[in-house]
Image (tube, rainbow, N blue to C red; front, side, top):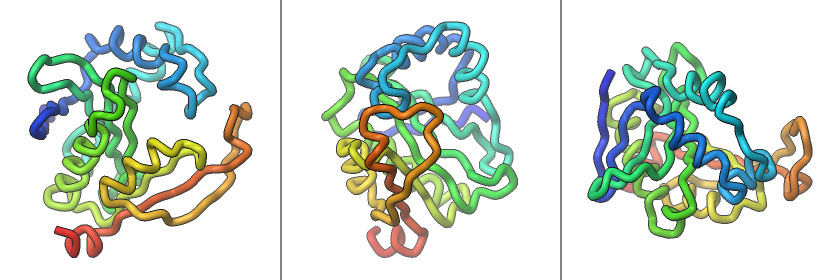
Length: 186
């Protein structure tokens, strides 16, 4: 279960209980959380009761967890996390790609680098057939990462937001990459 993935600059590893404080810091940066919950902070109790259990969950159909802690390889600094989890608990065919990195990591290509590495791993070793990702339509940085990672725009939609946040009135977008397109681009 201790799958570790390395890129030229990143080490991606399974989460541990000891990551709680790093997650707390990440989820308490209003800019990091801007397109997720409007920038509201997340309490330590919520990190331990809801966030960490989700990040520690195993997905037997992948043989690993669906969330990966991201560290800068040269320093060991916690940068954030990547999501690469199946939408159906029993099949690796369709996975959701996501990422949440601290502001110090923005604009350095880490999100694209980690996303590409997970996509390649998914198609070569996990039996993935389709990678999907979504974000708010106004989240241009995240959309650019999706495009640079090889995903293509699929559709716009309006999801059910429990509480509207700035920009949610513009809806959301979904991107995808299917195995055949990935193979053609290689």
